[in-house]
Length: 255
Image 1 (spheres, rainbow, N blue to C red):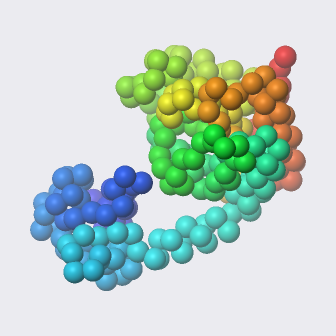
Image 2 (image 1 turned 90 degrees about the vertical axis):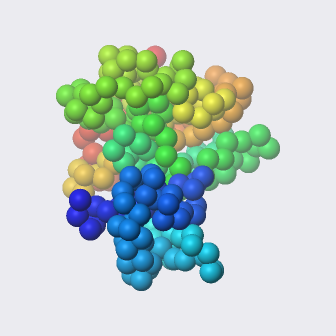
């Protein structure tokens, strides 16, 4: 494993539930020898990727990562355009909205807008969800060919919910529906008790793709709310697609 790959592997050990790590934690998660991990963590600390917590032997992500994430969000015109659409739809329907990207088999939220309803969904930015078991993920996977999806999923991971695709063939069938209709839906899957509707759009020049998603408690997804979310997201992504020339963005609504 190269040094850069090792650094990336360590950074992926951090999560919403693991904001601090020791040498032992990282050595167990990777796994790798403690001596190797200890040297790597010291080098990462010295270069600003992580920082020590006081006099303890624990580490947390460094300020450099926060700054890089902030720059990434500001530098991506696609993310910025998508975020404006999500913000508007979220304000219209009163439910939470996200802009997310796919990272391998997972999706990760980049931006978040809290809904105005007292009862609303709040998933932390940076939390990973299984791409195949979420509306956000399936909206992005639908941009791939079936052959590319099969390469990503030689075997489907254990489904987090009975409502998630149980087999690869079921996943491909759902992706075909997303391609026909232009949007993906989920209900009580990766996040229990949560319903979500998502639409993806991509930049053919940079090969960047993002998902625009509105989420709400499953009990609050009425027919009117569902239609307003779908129409708002489709209208917004059509505008973005027209600007950046996304021919893959079909957004075709069927009755």
